[in-house]
Image (cartoon, rainbow, N blue to C red; front, side, top):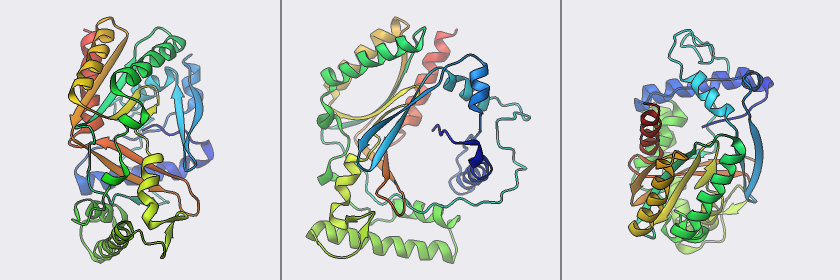
Length: 316
C-alpha cells in the first residue's frame, strides 16, 4: 500500500506505522515492511510521479498514482541494509498510538456469483509513462471484452454479503482494537462486536427502518454501500483487480496477458478463488468509507509472488 502525506504528518505517521508493524508481528505472526521516502528525493532521481483522484461513489474517492518513481521508492524500502534510512528502526520510541476506530471486518467470505473470484496484478513494462498509459487502456478494454462489464465482473453482490456471526473475523478485529488476543479489553470488544453484528443481521433480514445509523446510513442499507464504495479495481503503478468471472473467460484473459508478457510489454500475476474477502474502513463523523476487497486463500499476496517471479526471470 502506498500513502502520500505532508511532512507535517510524519512524526505521527512514523509512530503509527511502527506500532502496526509490531502489532501484526506479535499477534498474527506476519512480517510487514514499512518505510517512508520523501517525494523530493524521488524527483532528484529524475523519475516521474503523478497523482489524480477518481470518484468511485459519493462515499469514496480513489487516488491513482502513475510514474516510475514508485518503483524507486519500493527499492529504497526493500533494501535490507540494517542502516537503511528509509525503514523505521526497531529502536523507534512512539508518542502516538494508532486509533483503529472505524476499521472493521464483520462479513462472511462472499461467494462468487460467476464461479470464480480472481485477483490480478498487472505491471506495465513500457519504455515511458505515456506508453504505460496506452497499454493500460488496451488491458482495461480487454477486461470489458473478455471478462465482462463493471456489473458482471464486480466481486460483490449485495444479496451475497452476510454478517459473520461465527467469530472468525470479529476475533481478528477485536485483536487489532485491543492490541492482544487475550484480556478484559479483548473480551469486551468481542461482546460489543457480537451485539452489533446481531443488530445488523436483524436489520438486514427484517428490513428494519428504525434504530441507530452508521455513517448516516440505516443498518439495513449497509450492504449497498459495501458494493459501491469497494476498491475492487485500482492503479498505483500496477493495475490491481479482484474480478468475478468463470473459468473460460479467465483463461481467455490470461492468454491475452501471456501474449503481452512474451512480447516483453508487461508482467502479471493472478490467484484464483471461489470467494472474496472484505475489510472495511469507515471515517467517523462523515460519510466517507472504503471497503478493501481481495480473493480468499492468498489473493494479492500470491499474485504478487507470481509477478515477482516473472520480473526476476526477465532479468536473467
